[in-house]
Length: 368
Figure (cartoon, rainbow, N blue to C red):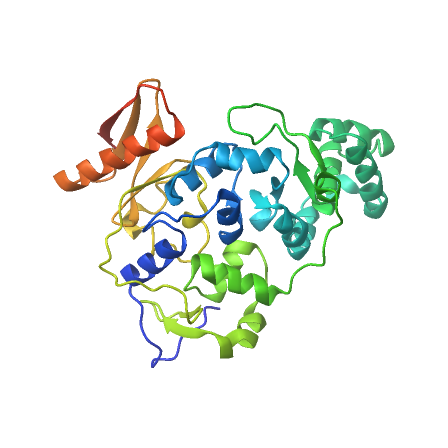
Protein backbone atom coordinates (compact mmCIF):
# COMPACT_ATOMS: atom_id res chain seq x y z
CA UNK A 1 0.00 0.00 0.00
CA UNK A 2 1.33 3.46 -0.96
CA UNK A 3 2.20 5.61 2.04
CA UNK A 4 0.48 8.98 1.99
CA UNK A 5 2.38 12.02 3.20
CA UNK A 6 1.18 14.38 5.87
CA UNK A 7 -0.93 17.12 4.26
CA UNK A 8 1.42 19.62 5.90
CA UNK A 9 4.52 18.16 4.18
CA UNK A 10 5.92 20.48 1.50
CA UNK A 11 4.68 19.60 -1.98
CA UNK A 12 7.02 18.88 -4.87
CA UNK A 13 5.57 19.13 -8.34
CA UNK A 14 6.61 17.00 -11.30
CA UNK A 15 9.09 19.56 -12.61
CA UNK A 16 10.63 20.00 -9.16
CA UNK A 17 11.13 16.23 -8.90
CA UNK A 18 12.50 16.15 -12.42
CA UNK A 19 15.11 18.82 -11.79
CA UNK A 20 16.12 17.36 -8.42
CA UNK A 21 16.71 13.93 -9.94
CA UNK A 22 18.51 15.29 -13.01
CA UNK A 23 20.84 17.31 -10.78
CA UNK A 24 21.86 14.18 -8.85
CA UNK A 25 22.25 12.24 -12.09
CA UNK A 26 24.62 14.89 -13.51
CA UNK A 27 22.14 15.48 -16.33
CA UNK A 28 21.53 19.17 -15.68
CA UNK A 29 25.22 19.95 -15.82
CA UNK A 30 27.96 17.46 -16.62
CA UNK A 31 30.06 16.53 -13.60
CA UNK A 32 33.86 16.87 -13.44
CA UNK A 33 34.39 13.44 -11.89
CA UNK A 34 36.11 10.24 -12.96
CA UNK A 35 34.16 7.42 -14.58
CA UNK A 36 34.91 5.16 -11.62
CA UNK A 37 33.66 7.76 -9.15
CA UNK A 38 30.50 8.27 -11.22
CA UNK A 39 29.79 4.52 -11.30
CA UNK A 40 30.02 4.56 -7.51
CA UNK A 41 27.88 7.67 -7.06
CA UNK A 42 25.16 6.29 -9.34
CA UNK A 43 25.30 2.92 -7.51
CA UNK A 44 26.03 1.18 -10.78
CA UNK A 45 24.95 1.49 -14.39
CA UNK A 46 22.49 -0.93 -15.93
CA UNK A 47 24.41 -2.98 -18.46
CA UNK A 48 22.51 -5.78 -20.16
CA UNK A 49 24.42 -4.72 -23.26
CA UNK A 50 28.08 -3.68 -23.40
CA UNK A 51 27.77 -0.12 -24.73
CA UNK A 52 25.04 1.51 -22.57
CA UNK A 53 27.30 2.35 -19.58
CA UNK A 54 29.63 4.25 -21.90
CA UNK A 55 26.83 6.31 -23.43
CA UNK A 56 25.37 6.87 -19.94
CA UNK A 57 28.63 8.41 -18.75
CA UNK A 58 29.10 10.42 -21.94
CA UNK A 59 25.79 12.15 -21.15
CA UNK A 60 26.81 12.86 -17.56
CA UNK A 61 30.55 13.55 -17.32
CA UNK A 62 32.61 16.49 -18.44
CA UNK A 63 35.51 15.43 -20.64
CA UNK A 64 34.51 11.77 -20.76
CA UNK A 65 36.05 9.43 -23.33
CA UNK A 66 35.24 5.71 -23.68
CA UNK A 67 38.69 4.73 -22.44
CA UNK A 68 37.87 6.38 -19.10
CA UNK A 69 35.57 3.44 -18.34
CA UNK A 70 37.33 0.81 -20.45
CA UNK A 71 40.56 1.27 -18.48
CA UNK A 72 39.15 0.61 -14.98
CA UNK A 73 37.14 -2.26 -16.48
CA UNK A 74 40.34 -3.85 -17.85
CA UNK A 75 42.18 -3.08 -14.60
CA UNK A 76 39.49 -4.85 -12.53
CA UNK A 77 38.39 -1.72 -10.70
CA UNK A 78 34.87 -2.02 -12.11
CA UNK A 79 33.05 -5.08 -13.42
CA UNK A 80 29.75 -6.41 -14.75
CA UNK A 81 27.62 -8.46 -12.35
CA UNK A 82 23.96 -9.34 -11.74
CA UNK A 83 22.73 -7.22 -8.82
CA UNK A 84 19.81 -4.80 -8.70
CA UNK A 85 16.50 -6.09 -10.06
CA UNK A 86 18.27 -9.33 -11.13
CA UNK A 87 19.88 -7.44 -14.02
CA UNK A 88 23.48 -6.97 -15.11
CA UNK A 89 25.06 -3.76 -13.80
CA UNK A 90 28.48 -2.22 -14.09
CA UNK A 91 29.67 -1.63 -10.52
CA UNK A 92 32.83 -0.63 -8.74
CA UNK A 93 34.82 -3.48 -7.22
CA UNK A 94 33.67 -2.44 -3.75
CA UNK A 95 30.01 -2.54 -4.77
CA UNK A 96 30.42 -5.90 -6.50
CA UNK A 97 31.67 -7.30 -3.19
CA UNK A 98 29.03 -5.66 -0.98
CA UNK A 99 25.85 -4.90 -2.92
CA UNK A 100 25.65 -8.45 -4.25
CA UNK A 101 25.34 -9.90 -0.71
CA UNK A 102 22.80 -7.19 0.12
CA UNK A 103 20.46 -8.29 -2.68
CA UNK A 104 21.00 -12.03 -2.15
CA UNK A 105 17.44 -12.46 -0.91
CA UNK A 106 16.18 -11.31 -4.32
CA UNK A 107 18.43 -13.87 -6.02
CA UNK A 108 16.97 -16.54 -3.74
CA UNK A 109 13.46 -15.50 -4.80
CA UNK A 110 14.49 -15.67 -8.45
CA UNK A 111 15.79 -19.18 -7.92
CA UNK A 112 12.37 -20.37 -6.79
CA UNK A 113 11.16 -19.94 -10.36
CA UNK A 114 13.50 -22.75 -11.40
CA UNK A 115 12.84 -25.21 -8.60
CA UNK A 116 11.02 -27.64 -10.91
CA UNK A 117 14.26 -28.14 -12.82
CA UNK A 118 16.32 -28.58 -9.66
CA UNK A 119 14.56 -31.56 -8.07
CA UNK A 120 17.09 -33.63 -6.15
CA UNK A 121 19.82 -30.97 -6.38
CA UNK A 122 21.54 -29.91 -3.16
CA UNK A 123 22.10 -26.20 -3.77
CA UNK A 124 24.94 -25.91 -1.26
CA UNK A 125 26.81 -28.68 -3.05
CA UNK A 126 26.05 -27.02 -6.38
CA UNK A 127 27.48 -23.71 -5.15
CA UNK A 128 30.70 -25.39 -4.01
CA UNK A 129 31.13 -27.22 -7.32
CA UNK A 130 30.28 -24.17 -9.42
CA UNK A 131 32.78 -22.06 -7.47
CA UNK A 132 35.51 -24.63 -8.10
CA UNK A 133 34.68 -24.65 -11.81
CA UNK A 134 34.66 -20.88 -12.42
CA UNK A 135 37.68 -20.21 -10.22
CA UNK A 136 39.66 -22.90 -12.07
CA UNK A 137 38.97 -20.91 -15.24
CA UNK A 138 36.18 -18.54 -16.34
CA UNK A 139 33.22 -20.47 -17.71
CA UNK A 140 30.35 -19.56 -20.00
CA UNK A 141 26.80 -20.40 -19.00
CA UNK A 142 26.91 -23.17 -21.62
CA UNK A 143 29.99 -24.66 -20.02
CA UNK A 144 28.35 -24.47 -16.60
CA UNK A 145 25.27 -26.23 -17.93
CA UNK A 146 27.40 -29.04 -19.33
CA UNK A 147 29.60 -29.47 -16.24
CA UNK A 148 26.79 -29.26 -13.70
CA UNK A 149 24.57 -31.45 -15.85
CA UNK A 150 27.18 -34.19 -15.67
CA UNK A 151 26.85 -34.11 -11.89
CA UNK A 152 23.02 -33.97 -11.89
CA UNK A 153 21.93 -35.59 -15.17
CA UNK A 154 18.25 -35.71 -14.17
CA UNK A 155 18.07 -31.96 -13.55
CA UNK A 156 17.39 -29.24 -16.11
CA UNK A 157 20.80 -27.98 -17.32
CA UNK A 158 19.62 -24.38 -17.76
CA UNK A 159 18.21 -24.33 -14.23
CA UNK A 160 21.53 -25.62 -12.88
CA UNK A 161 23.44 -22.75 -14.50
CA UNK A 162 20.92 -20.19 -13.26
CA UNK A 163 21.26 -21.64 -9.76
CA UNK A 164 25.02 -21.11 -9.92
CA UNK A 165 24.50 -17.49 -10.94
CA UNK A 166 21.97 -16.95 -8.17
CA UNK A 167 24.02 -18.58 -5.43
CA UNK A 168 27.39 -17.08 -6.36
CA UNK A 169 28.54 -13.48 -7.08
CA UNK A 170 29.62 -14.13 -10.66
CA UNK A 171 31.28 -11.31 -12.61
CA UNK A 172 31.75 -11.20 -16.37
CA UNK A 173 35.47 -11.27 -17.09
CA UNK A 174 37.11 -9.00 -19.64
CA UNK A 175 37.47 -8.42 -22.53
CA UNK A 176 33.66 -8.54 -22.30
CA UNK A 177 32.55 -5.02 -21.42
CA UNK A 178 35.66 -3.22 -22.67
CA UNK A 179 34.90 -0.58 -25.32
CA UNK A 180 36.25 -1.51 -28.74
CA UNK A 181 36.89 -5.14 -27.83
CA UNK A 182 34.67 -8.21 -28.04
CA UNK A 183 34.30 -11.31 -25.96
CA UNK A 184 31.68 -13.82 -24.95
CA UNK A 185 30.18 -13.81 -21.48
CA UNK A 186 32.52 -15.84 -19.29
CA UNK A 187 32.13 -15.88 -15.51
CA UNK A 188 34.20 -16.18 -12.37
CA UNK A 189 33.53 -15.19 -8.78
CA UNK A 190 33.92 -11.59 -7.66
CA UNK A 191 36.33 -12.74 -4.94
CA UNK A 192 38.56 -14.48 -7.48
CA UNK A 193 38.42 -11.62 -10.00
CA UNK A 194 39.27 -8.89 -7.50
CA UNK A 195 41.64 -10.98 -5.41
CA UNK A 196 39.92 -10.30 -2.09
CA UNK A 197 37.02 -11.78 -0.15
CA UNK A 198 33.46 -10.53 -0.24
CA UNK A 199 32.68 -8.08 2.49
CA UNK A 200 29.69 -8.14 4.80
CA UNK A 201 26.58 -6.74 3.17
CA UNK A 202 26.20 -3.05 4.03
CA UNK A 203 23.38 -2.02 6.30
CA UNK A 204 20.35 -1.26 4.14
CA UNK A 205 20.34 2.18 5.76
CA UNK A 206 23.55 3.10 3.94
CA UNK A 207 22.18 1.89 0.61
CA UNK A 208 18.96 3.89 1.07
CA UNK A 209 21.02 7.03 1.66
CA UNK A 210 23.08 6.36 -1.47
CA UNK A 211 19.92 5.80 -3.48
CA UNK A 212 18.46 9.12 -2.34
CA UNK A 213 21.72 10.88 -3.21
CA UNK A 214 21.49 9.57 -6.78
CA UNK A 215 17.72 9.26 -7.41
CA UNK A 216 15.86 11.20 -4.72
CA UNK A 217 13.53 12.56 -3.53
CA UNK A 218 11.88 9.14 -3.49
CA UNK A 219 9.26 6.96 -1.88
CA UNK A 220 9.64 3.59 -0.21
CA UNK A 221 8.21 1.95 -3.33
CA UNK A 222 10.70 3.82 -5.51
CA UNK A 223 13.59 2.36 -3.53
CA UNK A 224 12.10 -1.11 -3.76
CA UNK A 225 11.59 -0.83 -7.52
CA UNK A 226 15.21 0.26 -7.99
CA UNK A 227 16.80 -2.34 -5.73
CA UNK A 228 14.55 -5.38 -5.80
CA UNK A 229 14.59 -5.31 -1.99
CA UNK A 230 11.37 -5.72 -0.02
CA UNK A 231 10.19 -4.69 3.44
CA UNK A 232 12.21 -1.50 3.50
CA UNK A 233 9.59 0.67 5.22
CA UNK A 234 11.28 0.05 8.59
CA UNK A 235 14.58 1.31 7.17
CA UNK A 236 12.99 4.62 6.16
CA UNK A 237 11.33 4.89 9.55
CA UNK A 238 14.68 4.36 11.23
CA UNK A 239 16.21 7.05 9.04
CA UNK A 240 13.29 9.46 9.30
CA UNK A 241 14.95 11.74 11.92
CA UNK A 242 17.84 12.28 9.48
CA UNK A 243 15.68 12.95 6.41
CA UNK A 244 13.30 15.55 5.04
CA UNK A 245 9.86 14.52 3.86
CA UNK A 246 7.76 15.87 1.00
CA UNK A 247 4.64 14.88 -0.91
CA UNK A 248 4.38 14.32 -4.63
CA UNK A 249 1.44 15.47 -6.80
CA UNK A 250 -0.47 12.31 -5.85
CA UNK A 251 0.13 12.77 -2.13
CA UNK A 252 2.72 9.97 -1.78
CA UNK A 253 5.31 10.53 0.92
CA UNK A 254 8.81 11.20 -0.41
CA UNK A 255 12.05 11.14 1.57
CA UNK A 256 15.21 13.08 0.88
CA UNK A 257 18.61 14.05 2.20
CA UNK A 258 18.60 17.50 3.82
CA UNK A 259 21.59 18.76 1.82
CA UNK A 260 20.74 17.19 -1.55
CA UNK A 261 20.15 19.53 -4.51
CA UNK A 262 16.57 20.54 -5.25
CA UNK A 263 16.92 23.16 -8.01
CA UNK A 264 14.30 25.64 -9.07
CA UNK A 265 11.78 23.80 -11.29
CA UNK A 266 12.48 26.28 -14.09
CA UNK A 267 16.21 25.51 -14.18
CA UNK A 268 17.13 24.84 -17.83
CA UNK A 269 17.67 21.18 -18.69
CA UNK A 270 19.70 20.68 -21.89
CA UNK A 271 18.91 17.80 -24.25
CA UNK A 272 20.60 14.53 -23.36
CA UNK A 273 21.05 11.28 -25.33
CA UNK A 274 20.65 8.29 -23.02
CA UNK A 275 21.31 4.62 -23.78
CA UNK A 276 18.85 1.77 -23.62
CA UNK A 277 18.16 0.58 -20.08
CA UNK A 278 19.34 3.82 -18.47
CA UNK A 279 18.58 3.68 -14.76
CA UNK A 280 17.08 7.17 -14.85
CA UNK A 281 14.01 5.65 -16.52
CA UNK A 282 13.91 2.45 -14.44
CA UNK A 283 14.53 3.40 -10.83
CA UNK A 284 11.20 4.75 -9.59
CA UNK A 285 7.81 3.14 -9.12
CA UNK A 286 6.28 6.40 -10.37
CA UNK A 287 8.27 7.45 -13.43
CA UNK A 288 6.28 10.56 -14.32
CA UNK A 289 9.15 12.73 -13.06
CA UNK A 290 10.91 11.78 -16.32
CA UNK A 291 8.31 10.01 -18.50
CA UNK A 292 5.20 12.07 -19.35
CA UNK A 293 2.08 9.89 -19.04
CA UNK A 294 1.31 10.32 -22.74
CA UNK A 295 4.65 8.68 -23.58
CA UNK A 296 4.41 5.78 -21.15
CA UNK A 297 5.46 2.50 -22.75
CA UNK A 298 7.06 4.10 -25.80
CA UNK A 299 10.64 3.22 -24.84
CA UNK A 300 10.17 -0.56 -25.09
CA UNK A 301 9.24 -3.19 -27.64
CA UNK A 302 8.93 -6.65 -26.13
CA UNK A 303 11.97 -7.09 -23.91
CA UNK A 304 14.09 -4.57 -25.80
CA UNK A 305 14.54 -0.98 -24.69
CA UNK A 306 15.22 1.86 -27.10
CA UNK A 307 17.83 4.57 -26.74
CA UNK A 308 16.08 7.69 -25.46
CA UNK A 309 16.23 11.45 -25.83
CA UNK A 310 15.50 13.94 -23.07
CA UNK A 311 14.28 17.42 -23.99
CA UNK A 312 13.63 19.92 -21.20
CA UNK A 313 14.43 17.09 -18.81
CA UNK A 314 11.66 14.74 -19.97
CA UNK A 315 11.45 11.79 -22.35
CA UNK A 316 10.84 13.29 -25.80
CA UNK A 317 12.00 10.74 -28.34
CA UNK A 318 14.29 7.94 -29.44
CA UNK A 319 17.56 7.74 -31.32
CA UNK A 320 19.51 5.26 -33.40
CA UNK A 321 22.90 5.23 -35.10
CA UNK A 322 23.11 4.31 -38.77
CA UNK A 323 26.24 4.10 -40.91
CA UNK A 324 25.96 7.75 -41.87
CA UNK A 325 23.77 9.49 -39.30
CA UNK A 326 22.50 9.92 -35.79
CA UNK A 327 18.78 9.61 -36.42
CA UNK A 328 16.66 11.46 -33.86
CA UNK A 329 12.99 10.50 -33.78
CA UNK A 330 10.85 12.72 -31.59
CA UNK A 331 7.37 12.03 -30.30
CA UNK A 332 6.29 15.58 -31.04
CA UNK A 333 7.80 18.21 -33.38
CA UNK A 334 10.56 20.15 -31.58
CA UNK A 335 10.65 23.92 -31.66
CA UNK A 336 13.33 25.59 -33.71
CA UNK A 337 15.36 26.29 -30.59
CA UNK A 338 15.02 22.74 -29.34
CA UNK A 339 16.04 21.36 -32.72
CA UNK A 340 19.23 23.42 -32.66
CA UNK A 341 20.04 22.31 -29.10
CA UNK A 342 19.37 18.65 -29.93
CA UNK A 343 21.61 18.90 -32.99
CA UNK A 344 24.44 20.46 -30.99
CA UNK A 345 24.16 17.82 -28.26
CA UNK A 346 24.04 15.04 -30.85
CA UNK A 347 27.15 16.36 -32.59
CA UNK A 348 28.91 16.50 -29.24
CA UNK A 349 27.93 12.92 -28.41
CA UNK A 350 29.18 11.71 -31.79
CA UNK A 351 32.50 13.50 -31.33
CA UNK A 352 32.96 11.91 -27.89
CA UNK A 353 31.82 8.38 -28.66
CA UNK A 354 32.71 8.04 -32.35
CA UNK A 355 35.60 10.42 -33.08
CA UNK A 356 36.84 10.47 -36.63
CA UNK A 357 33.66 8.98 -38.03
CA UNK A 358 31.52 10.96 -40.45
CA UNK A 359 27.91 11.14 -39.28
CA UNK A 360 25.37 13.92 -39.41
CA UNK A 361 22.25 14.45 -37.31
CA UNK A 362 18.97 13.64 -39.04
CA UNK A 363 15.47 14.17 -37.64
CA UNK A 364 12.30 12.13 -37.95
CA UNK A 365 9.12 11.39 -36.03
CA UNK A 366 8.27 8.27 -34.03
CA UNK A 367 5.33 6.54 -35.69
CA UNK A 368 2.47 5.25 -33.60
